Length: 111
Image (tube, rainbow, N blue to C red; front, side, top):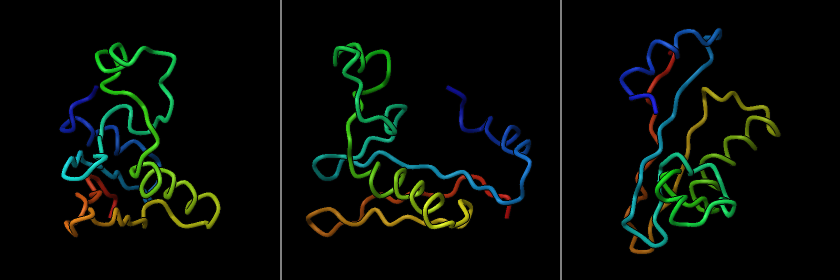
């Protein structure tokens, strides 16, 4: 994994001014929690036993709210609706007690 502090230089090599890097965050206030890790974009790691997936992949891939409200939402909006990826925003909603889910943030932007 590349430390976050080292993302700036490669980001500059992306040949467009219409770019933005979003970051999601783990939020375990509610159940099931949101786990922002290497497996957040997967929904099936059954090819690994769960313990091995936890040790080697930093988690077991499952379909969750981060998929629906962040990753898949972004893909749908860009591919189907023609929105620009650098202009997206995300609403992850609130937990059952009304507390807001930890939001997706913009880490790097060409703007």
